Image (spheres, rainbow, N blue to C red):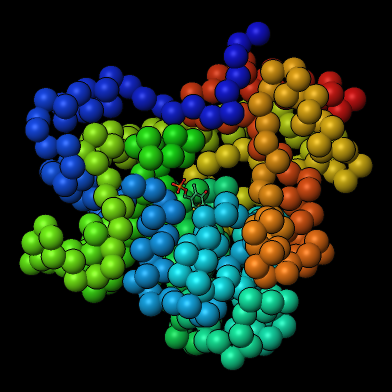
Length: 383
Ligand SMILES: *Cc1c(COP(=O)(O)O)cnc(C)c1O
């Protein structure tokens, strides 16, 4: 039996050499490698600006600051995501206003966004928000590597003059109606933790076409130093969100291999799809027709309500198959409950998917044999 990991980075000698090359120079931060990495993103996506940072969360936080989202402001977003997409509002004492998701894709439901923009009082949390606070932005998430349905979202945003921050941290390389994920809103954010489609160890990046936002975010990531500031001059309250040269060099090789990496992930997803479709009670990911390219991030299945997901997960783990419930709804995290008074039942579609979903071991370097083994054990355990 081969050892099966939840996820694995896909690294070659080119990445190892690129990092070693940086170590032969005295410049380990704020050098040419980060500029080259950013340029590769502009080339790939067509964005005017790319701002590399040291995590996806940092990238999302810079977008919140650049969009002028502050204390008490409302931002419409999804509770079916990784916590970072909502936490960045809390960093500024702004309020995430959750709306439920499309049960097919797990992405935020544009119809509900429209209703929330027009009747926000119906969607405010029980506490922690003011009824007359302004709605500033929409923050959709491209869940599991599939873009949110962005055309209707952008139409609502345009009508009501709202900023859109697209959390594409799970969807690098995905395409919506042949347009790249991350380019569909005012900002797009990517992340490079080792389980993502490309990795820099830790890292993230923001793309935008807006010159002013880009300058401001570059200043904020570098301790608030505006263009022309000296090392000890700080025009703004900023952060150290810089990405170092080793990570940037690694990332530049990874992004140059993106199509290869995505093709391998797609092949593994295809093996899963084929094997799992034969097992009763297991539903695989729906890919919508507007998703002209899926960028497989995780491989998440849903079990029929008749199957005890948690008991199944425990049995799989006991047999050496790492699996993870995915996502745990954000509104039910303890600090969210305490701050906003959310309760079970508030977002039924999110909770239902949260209860029935399981992420299986997945990466581009996973062998067909390993996929067979996982599927075989799932079938056996369900029986
Ligand atoms: C990975 C991820 C992020 C960013 O994660 P970091 O660990 O901060 O790089 C943000 N949002 C979503 C939906 C993610 O999956």
